[in-house]
Length: 494
Image (cartoon, rainbow, N blue to C red):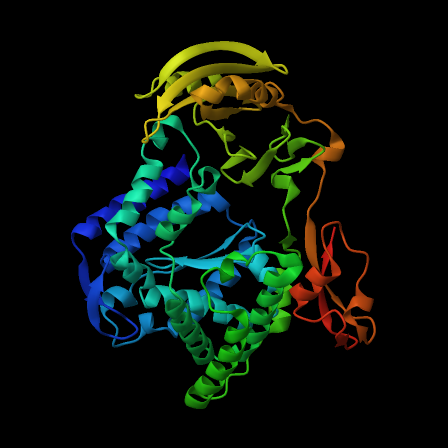
């Protein structure tokens, strides 16, 4: 799987640095110290991982919004330590890429070497350009301070070995990685080199500094961090990803205000907020999951864009990603994976997969699945831990594409899960129902408050899955806060 290849790349790089580290400069402090890898290696790792991140999460399909975020990112970058005249040339000349990921999760992160990502979910929860400037500055700060490289140097070899044991052999079996097989904790820490609280505090300081130097009122970001705290508390939900390693949002809210005041004293008054410009850019952005990219309803998974559907077995959770759809059994004893094969026919795809070294083919054949040409293969392989996994894999042709549906479980459990696998694979069918094909997402509308009233009184009928509290958080107001007439409101609209 693509994700497994990312982990193998990162793993091999980390092993190299366990044997020999790099002495290099910190662009923020100007001091030299030991790092997990050199700046050139950071750039190479970031470039490789960027391709995998894009494949994993997908880019949000709005070129104008992408250009806007990149343009603002380049402005903030120009005021960072990486672009100062006394900074070594290798840092000054490193290009940066700013991307908008097609995810409803409120999140932002950076990869080593100059790759910064924000999600559409995060953009919907920001209230102006100043807040986005601080977020982008925060992520640039992680790259400039080389936090990932510092963490890599501090990793113990035993931790790295965990990653190797987790993914070796997955290229042959095609097993999905990540949290599906309970590898998420270790893999995430190694892939993103989980930052410390001190790293996060330093990036907060840098983000505020860079935003203020660019002329933005960085104190505006305090309201966003207050909204993050409300998100984490809503319905007892776990912390959003953006908060997973960060200091307490309440602490950050106060700290951001203090930092902004301090930097405005040093640099000069910075008052730019640009809410009107920002709202114009994000109006129409998709909120929540986009059903056009696949959704679950009435015990089935539907994909309107690719025009197919299949049944979802009871007790299986669906994880829909741009590059694959995962169906994970509640006890994680079995998993089904839907991907696109690169070959031009089902027969060719089946032959290529079955010919891999390390697989023992037990059965194969061809049939028609709901009128579609299909080839199936049953095979076994060994994991790195010596367990025998049996795989039932169907390759199905549909509208010029070849779909791979693979069911994995331990060989001893195969008889139990084979009927479930077949239910899904033989249930794969063309989608022709107009009601399922024409489903539309909820999008963000900007509307002025018609009168002065509490926020909750100004809300129209909300689409399903959107609560008044969630919309209030998105607007960074309390439900009972009085909103003045004419104030622009962010509202979900179908």
